[in-house]
Amino acid sequence: MAPRAWSKLSTADALVLGAIQILMGIFHVFMWYLLLTLYIGQTPGVFGIYSPITYQAGCSLWGVVFILSGALIITVARIPYPCLITGAIILNILSILLTMIAVILTVAELFTFHSLSYRNYGQAKLGREVSRVLLLSYPLEFVVAVSYSILTCSDLVSVYLLTGLSRDVDFSRLYEEMKFNDSCIDNEKQQYDCFVVA
Image 1 (cartoon, rainbow, N blue to C red):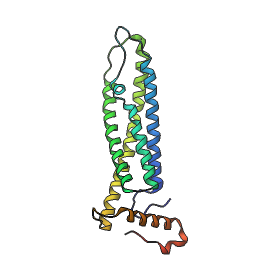
Image 2: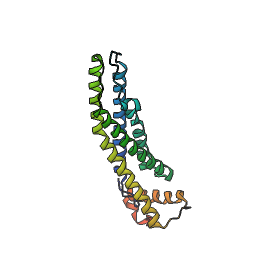
Image 3: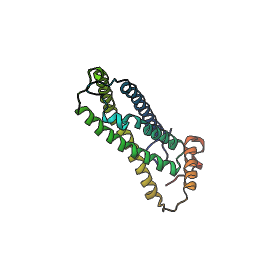
Image 4: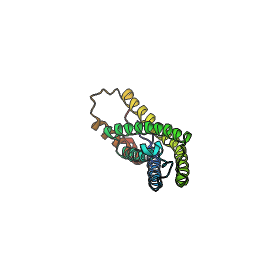
């Protein structure tokens, strides 16, 4: 797929970034379910149960935000409406913040270990290993969200600066022009009839 005339991010690149975010979100939700079944099965003993701060905060369940963000990126790649673009940027910024908070909480969990009942030691050890795996996956989510946010924001700035748009512009007309431009790029026989957005 050819990149749009106004975009630094091609449609294929956006689809790949969205798919990566969806897969990372699904992975995080599955890890949350694993931790849920692991920690619910603990038996209270003399020293208590292992309930880390990442489990209490539901850090792995934040993968739902990653799934929504990836789905919105894919939607924007197909239908670039301004409200969808704004929503995708907002969800990606939220993903960045959640990823940074999750890294801080996971590092805090891995550096503290309280004594607990010997019956729960195996579950606690496995839970900490899951947290280590999640700690390795957070940078990928961070990089995907940051790269999409930066490229999309720079695209929006370039649209405003290069076309001289004011804040009260009719985006539906601009979208129709870009849609017409994309259909002409895909159809090489009619390229001489294309309207190119400057």
